[in-house]
Image (cartoon, rainbow, N blue to C red; front, side, top):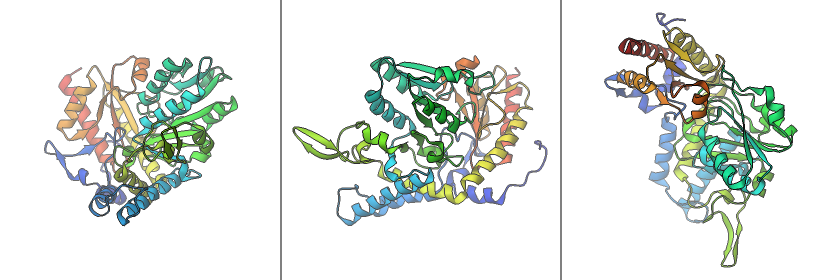
Length: 414
């Protein structure tokens, strides 16, 4: 394929695009080309309408009310939890805890499990390709608890350097926390193998699946993950909602992360007893509409088909990799085999300038360090530009991206 060829849009993609209202708009008089899906995805009508329906017809607090609206809201919220649990193949919906996002989910593990299980002489292993949300919480806990934080390095090609994994994973390691798909490099890590390696030395494994759950089938039982986290807004769901999955025995043993209403079974002035899972970790009035919206998003994705989404993104990303590699002065970060995103630099042009030029033509990409400064430090660059794809993107949109980048190269004449 090349940019001069005529590419027919898959009728399924045309049909899918019609379900996303924002894709109908123009930016600076040009049709929107939205390629910032690793930051957040657009929302289909099914999600928007599910939340609108809650607020219009049965807005109420959940769990404790016995009136009709409260019972309807409770049923919708808990029904969403059940469907989300099935979506990742959790053995029980009690293992799926609603959080604000993947960041909060990791913080729950760090503060709750970490405080109860980590101390001087212990080690936590993460990788050099982590999002800040899987670095900073462990750094905070390291300062407070005195354990050692170690890193699996990355190769020049953007893969995990596993040559010393047998040394890094040892009898002192209590947790191996790693990203499934890098949000900068696109690297798809061998999650099941890494979990198995952690378990072989008696360590637990936490998977940041923020860039995998929206794009490919993910089975927590097949992975044997002890903990797995993801954000709703990256899989067609609303902002302000995410999931912490954990093995039940671990969650049962962990103390609450926050105290307040709904996470208690009994409160006396002399002390309190905690509620059962998952409510022990869900203090206060939850994000009810957002939970319902996330349930609708999961239904939508299953109707589209996770296998189809992965195959479509693979074809689209392979085409984008080929086309971008032909742009003079453009350097792609990470391996050729990857998930649905490509980060790159273009000569000496700052990524923010690239983004501004593309935005003038209606093309939305991300520019910066993508909350992953250690990766950029490792590669010797300050920032990068990133195009990320999803189920509604087309080959024609990739061509528009390439045209925009060639235009930027001419403007800045590097």
